[in-house]
Length: 412
Image (cartoon, rainbow, N blue to C red; front, side, top):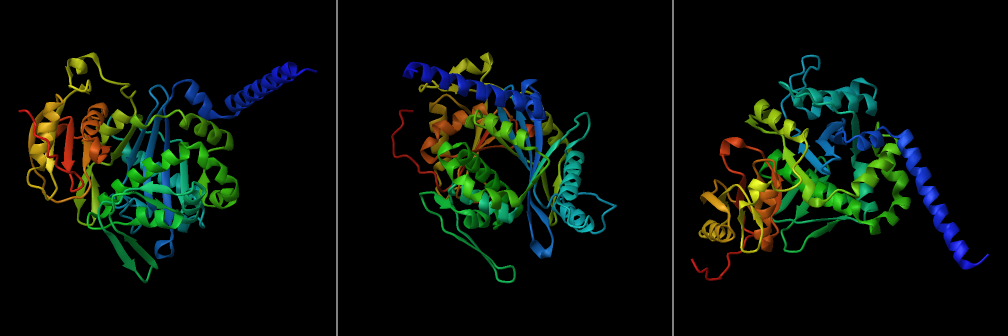
């Protein structure tokens, strides 16, 4: 048999193999059927610890994926979020629900996870918006460390000092700010996401969101997959989920198609109430409704009325706040944005100092915030979504100390 026939048979065999795998996935996987019908996929991600000798949900996120627009939405739920749970004496925070159920179910991960999932559904459902979360994914510290090590580490930027010592809990966290990113192994990555600092739970929520963003980047990198086999047993021992093997395979295949500019990072709206975080039901309902509808693919024709000199599609209104130690930073950014066609309607000094520059999406459309971030690309600002219609702007820019004022003499 000549080489040409061998090659043709090999190609045909490979095609038949993948066709067979696809048929099996479509038959065995509810997720595959949901993707095929364009149905949104909702899930809960919980990270648990052994603090105080009991399991706590140290990290809690509501994740929603829209296969039509390929938008991935992540809403972080602060661990100190206030809950009303009369049937659970002493439970006042959302992270205590897992602890209570884990203890009273005989240390059953599935029961504790399902109970927490149900509580999250109740918390996010209000008015006419009903949230159904069919899938949960729970990971403990051991599984988290193993996952990060299997990926060869995760890159993160540290823009402010992070120092904390707890001799009783054997927790020691030390990071100094530096221009180049850290490559964190599993142990150091766990320290990074656990750090609270002066901004307490809200600061940790932001760090965890940005970490998830970098983690997904590593998961999408095919060069890291070869490390997984040697870590498989350790990683799987720390994971608990109701997602089947076939569903997981489909999710990994679909995940490779998600684009980075289609990732929206939300946080549960609310305000501090003593040591707790009190949810704002109205704003929460607005964001959940936004997450459950088809996300914007790009700018609408009305949004294309203004274009910058760099041909950037510009839309909406912008406010700029100086949280840096440089007195003229806000004015410099305002001039730069207006030069590029943005409508800056408000600027001034922020109430506190911060190191990291943030571009905040206030409308949920995301694209205007990304266009602003592109103009400020020299500082690589992080883009997060914090929908607040009451602010009456589409984008907020919080200038941190990482922003360098240009010496360029503008012509206006």
